[in-house]
Length: 391
Image 1 (cartoon, rainbow, N blue to C red):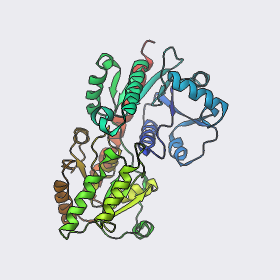
Image 2 (cartoon, helix red, strand yellow):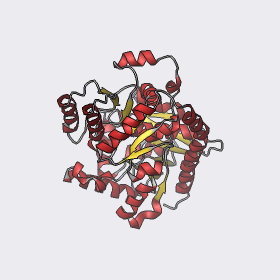
Image 3 (cartoon, one colour):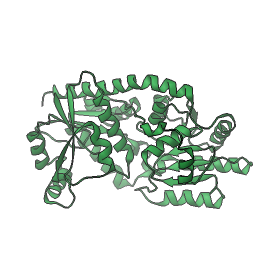
Image 4 (cartoon, rainbow, N blue to C red):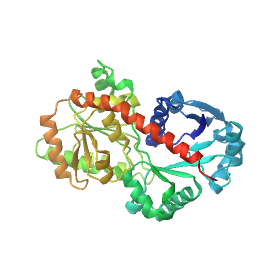
């Protein structure tokens, strides 16, 4: 059994990374002929909902390296920034028989373990205007270091592989595509809580659902504009939005959206719920008219994958990666055309019934185990290939 170390990627600010790791660890646990053993490396003091979510399907290895403001944490942090790995971490891996460190943004030459790293996307190459020049250069350096000094690089889509080929054509042999699969939580299927959810979040009746962080590239504005267009025509719809309501690139994005709502009197049409429990996310997803993802750019959308796994229709921007994900019954629109989106939403509002789609759910459930198997076997194959590489 090959022991594979993982550290927690993502945070409450970026739940996409946390959800990705949760899905990956779960998929490994379903392997019938498992040759890899996941080990989750966390701080000795860590005790939160994220660890509860991730620790169910992996051995948990605790270390002071990840306990903030301790000496081991400081030594590890300084060394990692300088060279991508640290002596305390390397020693810990060797001591615990870790043969591969995966998805952990750890890299370097001459390490006592192999490294597999995940590049979620190359967004800064497509949307440089959404980053400072300093941030673009930082991301370039990060990606080049990771590619140069890792044994294997995982990409979540063939669309991202195309970007990789242009970014680092000389290192294409390191790249592998692994399309992740989301796992629906049982909370999504709990019956009889409709009234509780509506009371908890202050709404009633039918609704569309947009579960994305409030980052500028997620393109909430086109959906808000579509709701405004409908309202001005006397067509009231309800949109519920959840997700982290800050953008690390500046608070202007959220402020602009809030001001847009107020200036056009959309407070009863659009509800900003912020961060909500993951079980509630899946319940809202299952019981909405359609999930919406208007994003200008994705590496591989968690929102779309969750909708595919639950069996929910999606209204989504017609970007290449969304078409690669190909959710059953997906309705695509130009992410810069709110009029087109307004027409789709109104058609769904008039023609769609609120709540679950039995046929889509049935098909999703029938396909989920096979999709998960392919995801898990793909990762295991990548690990075995990486272990077999010469240093």
